[in-house]
Image (spheres, rainbow, N blue to C red):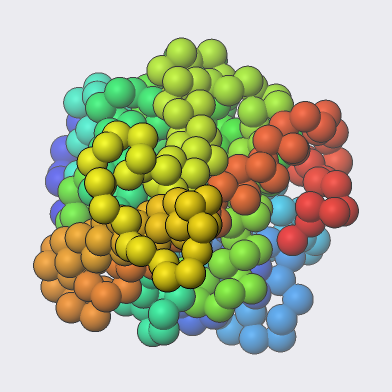
Length: 371
């Protein structure tokens, strides 16, 4: 990946800001990709690593040209990033890229131009996953593709982004003071920062260019996915409690409300779809059942057939676009995510009724909801 940063005084400097604890060698590739993608400076914060091999990785990162800041105690990602930001020169307008140590950066000059041209103060860069190695990974790979090609684009068009990805956002030095330097009180610090930015009048746009995509790892075990999704649900509930449904934006409140209702109502509506709209006059006949049982079982089968058909369509489209044919049959599992998200939506709504409290710059959820 060639360095695409243009010369000239008008080109804003791109600084990569990476917080890492007990990194793997993937951190080295991340730093390399940031430099190659257009970063003039990369700052890596050792967030209190206690693994004996971490020092070797940080030494190699420093050899690649990155500045390494060592923290003796782990106090969380947001605190580590604040230490890194505080080390930046304050006399220049600087664009910052935040990346996790398992993330490879794309062409940074593309989102940098969006900021330079005054189109945005914060740019959420497209995120795609490395090819999954098992069924869970394949399902998530297809899900990420669907989010990027439809949901994020729609929310960007409506100026109603509900969340940002902390591993792939680029923003101005001024925006960083709002996103980073204000303490976080939720588990989803990036989304909370996005809601704070609304109140500060900062503009957020989505960079859909594939050349600028960040490629990130995803959990490929059931336990890892469960922990990740539950954290998002809990964190979003905390954000809603702190900032309201839309954080001051009517559009975001509307989209947020629609999304939550859809997650809860979609499984039920699909069950009754055939009878409500009269589009499916036929339902499978179940021998030996009475009228009520026939109605329930017949509609259930038709709902499952609708969900399977919808999923196969998504899977086929994703397989063509990503040129990975194994994704086509995986699409049948995509509609089931609505059921899974519905469960977490209930969790998030329950958390929103609780009052968050500051504790080491992070909110502690009730034990019964902890991952």
